[in-house]
Length: 210
Picture 1 (cartoon, rainbow, N blue to C red):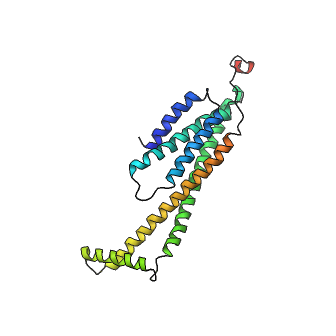
Picture 2: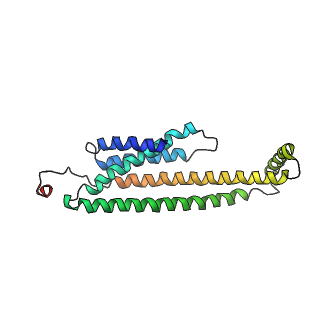
Picture 3: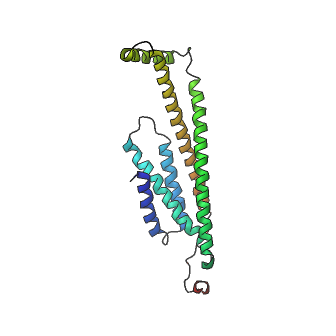
């Protein structure tokens, strides 16, 4: 199982046990805190990061997400009469799915635009007047010439340099995305504390009898 899925599974089980013992708004705030911290850690990775170093940050993104959505359902529906619970549950699930779709589209669009912006910035430094660029390009061309001949060595070196630029631009775009998630988590943490305390439902009430 992927680290994120494992973290989500663990948090769902744990949050389900804590919902009746700890106020839901504190659980949601804690979920945003965990998710925001994990996003902040991921926003500082580099291309040299190992798979093992990514396990716990990715695990805690799933763990924090579970602590957000499980108590959020209780906070959203807990104060409603039982006769309205069916319709409210349907609306809640609909809005959650719509929000997830919009969120995925928004993040994908921002990632593409940020990658293009970073690519433009990086390419601006790759000029014939940049000595470091020329030295790197010449070294790569020499390597390609030694392995495959000098006829296409220069073109291969330029192509390899371009792939490096694309990789760096995509990495910077992902780091921007993780910073965005960290900021959203701070806003979500503050918003979660504004929820009202949900009182335990009295099953012996007249509304429950219907």
